[in-house]
Amino acid sequence: MKDEGQRAPWREQIRVIIFEADTPVGKAFDIGLFVAIVLSVAAVMVESVDGFRHEHGRLLYGIEWVFTALFTLEYGLRLICVQQPLRYARSFFGVVDLLAILPTYLSILFPGAQSLLVIRGLRLLRIFRVFKLGQFLGEASLLRAALAGSRHKITIFLGTVLILVTILGAAMYLIEGQESGFDNIPISVYWAIVTMTTVGYGDIAPQTPLGKALASFVMILGYSILAVPTGIVTAEILETARSERTPTTRSCPHCTSDGHRADARFCRDCGGALAEPA
Image (cartoon, rainbow, N blue to C red; front, side, top):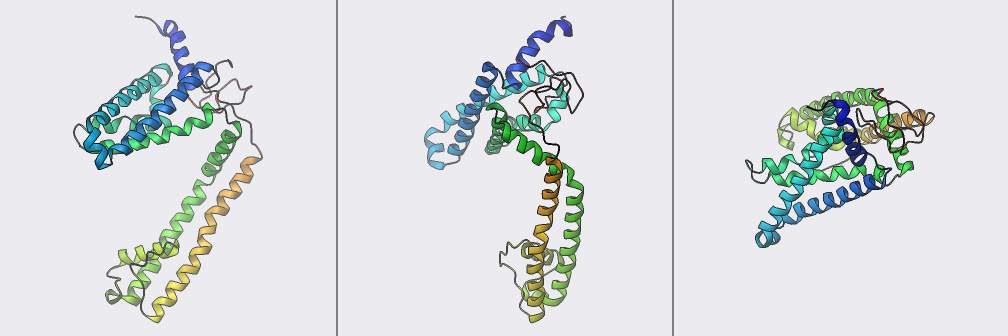
């Protein structure tokens, strides 16, 4: 059996082709992958139309399996060429890649599951890396860091909102009651959420003067509450922008994390040594 040292060269070549976008071959691979993703999603959408399904059902079914076989092969190669396959499998794109092929296999046991194949569209997020859109990579990295930095504040905010809509829903239930459609507290909480988020379906509405007064208060409160998460994320973006750096498409051979600086020698996420730029 060949040892890891003997396997490393061909695994590294596959990794560069699949994960890097700086080489002509790697860029061609990713562009071809994008074309395949778009065509497969289009085939799923066309298959949902009754006329096309009845007339070209067998052809669309065959196309679906061809794309699934290609994506399955690609997913297997991604796991083979990285040094930590489980880490990649648990990453965002690793999960998306797996979900892109599972529905077809599940459709064997659960007919209709193939409609979930539209999730393959998420794989198009790699377009920013493929076409070396550095400024978009930078903005995406900045936004991701800001969202991660504000997650605790956002969690507290959402918890406060949930408590608030529960109290307001219970109050509206006591004021209006079943006569106005507020049959129970959960339905009243649903009304409070719809009203506070300014969606306003109108399927349930207060009838009494006191209920309308409370509804007016909830509507006005909704406008002020919606501004809170925007302010939190904006503050984090400004704070993160101070340490903004220009990323590249270089990816880590250990954890597949990309967006490293051109002069970086080690991965910012796992600490593994980066391959020299091509």
